[in-house]
Length: 231
Image (spheres, rainbow, N blue to C red):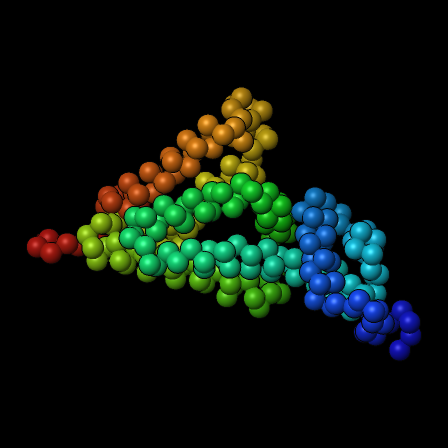
């Protein structure tokens, strides 16, 4: 192996901390890829900003593609990990749904880099995510949680709509995502600042009320549940 061989472990220094180094690389790479995309992001720039080397980055992540995928996996892991701390299944069903909506709304508002990363990967038609064995499993948890909340709400007679957990997740995510991803064009075209505090508060309440109203009605977009005595 030569000194330039990416499979050669970097020489440890007196303050060598591999996990801290990897996390620093991921943090800087997340910013690089979110701002410039996969094609525009440069490993050399990431190495320079992290005071590492291209060889070290490739030793940890294998390639530029491997680093980019690790950034995506960490981005999804972060949001799902925080979701899991909300203990939604311990809450009353309507409160649980509103808590999930509020969290999703605030998280995406505060993490525009997450929105950009997801948008960029969609431009690539999820080409890189297809190689992940992690992201699919990470996102199973939110669907399972929503399913349990819906089941509890229906059992208590609070929710009547038979919407699927995946469709409900889509509705919540779509509204919260669009507000951030299309903020600049929407503001320019319709002269409404989506980042303004009063607009944020109104929109957060609006999506919460809309989802709860949907769940409490049979609706036309899903097959209604049959209640006792129904023919």
